[in-house]
Amino acid sequence: MSPASTNDPHERATLLRFLGKLGQAELNAGNAVSLVERDLAMIARANGEPDVQVFVLPTVLFLKWEKGDEHQVDMAHGAYRVGPLRFDQIEEVLTIARSARKGELTPQEGLDRLSEMWRTPHYYGDVGYVCGYLMTTLGVAIMLRPSWKGLLITGLMAFVCALILVVARRRPSWSVVLPVVVSFVLSAGVALGYRYGLKEPALNILIPPLITFLPGMMLTVSVIELAYNSIISGASRMVAGFTRLVLLAFGIIGGFKTFDDGSTHFATQFTDRIPTFWPWLGVVLFAFGLHIYQSSKRRSFIFMLITAFMAYGGQTLSGLFINGASTAFFGAALMTMTALVIEFRFNGPPAIVTFLPGFWLLTPGSFGLMSVTGIASGLDTGGSVLALLFALSGIATGCLIGAFVYNALLHPRKASWWRVQDA
Image (tube, rainbow, N blue to C red; front, side, top):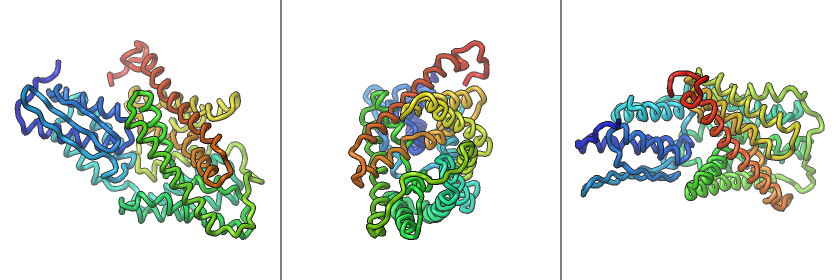
């Protein structure tokens, strides 16, 4: 039974303010708009206000309360007005939402916890931020199996990129131009290196340091929203994701064109590579680095590692039997089921926290950057972009199928053999 509706205008105003702040934080955490609308509507009903209507877009949300002749409309700006959330902050936001949905948290308590969440400092400080970024980059580089020399060059570029990010993260207004600036600086360094004997594939050593700029999660969520018929939000996220790729490609090509003397022959494949078992060690290094860089809670690391292994393992093992971008489907499906089991079966972190690393291990970000860069430089006529869209569809479908399988077979409310505390 729902709580009785309150007639106190002050309590209702506090509830609407809480819903606006929480919705803003969830959008900044990367949650799909359909899930944000679900959370806010359930919280309103849990607080005795079933007449609250919620309309969410990626950059703004509207809250309307109407009863008889009375009505009230509130608006909150979306993610572009605030800084990006770290993993520990994302987990806190979704934990607040989960508690509020169950009625365990009052609107004022929720507002206080959200305010405290924004003030939470990075667990490991600037030194941990740089070291974590360096380990994350090296983990991705190892999964691409470069030569030892290429791995060293990637590490040096990651260190430069991390120092730039340390300075820029305190200045949110720089976020628009930062992808262009960083990609230009790194590609200029690679172009100069080719003048002095560098023989490593350019994009393969450039992509790992740019890993945090790649919009794999944004592009995948856009496809999921389109699948849920959220046309406006899905289309706008997809445009924003491709715009990020275009900005990165613009910076990369600008750096190459500025410092290439025209006589340099860019390598397209590694002449010497590290052993084949190293990519699995790269997954561990990647997850641990991301844990430090994104300041996730200590209990989350092992869950992040398990989900990352499932994503990478599903994609790698399926690649033994099929070729192409469709392998990402299997990684996404296993990743989603694993993340949901961790959240509801083991009372672990919210699923979005544990499978965010998996999105960076799948193809859309790096593959999309290669596609856009190839088209802009005239080396590709657009065929790889179709493969990118196919990969995005495969990942989104894998997430949907994984969630469906979990809800049908594994959720404790649906499976009698899977008895745990009701989530």
